[in-house]
Image (cartoon, rainbow, N blue to C red; front, side, top):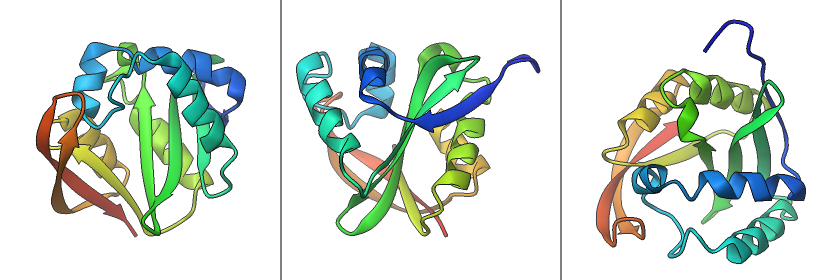
Length: 160
């Protein structure tokens, strides 16, 4: 990534969902994310789900922009009473430090602590992003990964 690129986050709008949906149809990204909807190509289900999520006051959803172009999303949500974080960056921008920079910006906006992140055992890139952002691996869990049609191990990370 060149020094003249401008990375920013802004609150996600319903209009962003059309664009964000496209990133979540990439087969390689789906595989690494692992814990995806049963049918990640169902655009109507995606729009309906995220329209509802955007209205939920317990979530904090931001769109990641690079030079004013949408390249991903960051969000905090609450599951079982615990704050968790999730993010998705367009695969074209992997390996450039963008996810790390975006997550660090997001963590300045979203100050809930502790906050947890979960990542598939073999998603090494995402594990590095979390570790560079101060998350500590605190355990493992298992769950059914729709993208792989099997139960897999996931690593649990925590930022205090």
